Image (cartoon, rainbow, N blue to C red; front, side, top):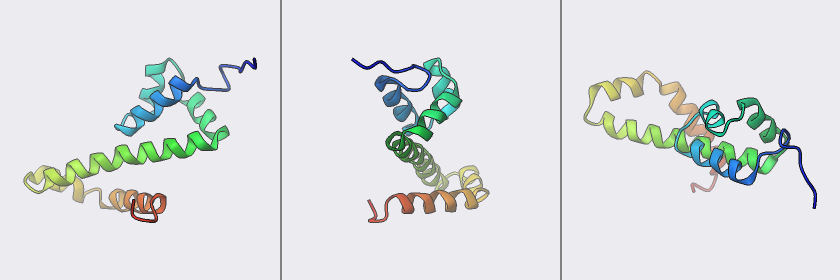
Length: 107
């Protein structure tokens, strides 16, 4: 049975936890602290593991898109939410561009 160096690899449960937390909008820093890791160890694992890197990017984008959808819904009736959204139009546009790039078929 092959053993791996814990520094070089995230355990499967840690991978899934990072992806789940990113998907609900947690930052990599908070996720790492939750797991008793450093953000650098997760970033390093993502650099070395293409599949995890892609899944992490999708999860992070999902978290941001969920936040933006919630703020957009609130902006319909709340002037402060509307102002917040308008003040970040460049971020919203970049996020939507990333989403379209990752979901070219409109998924």
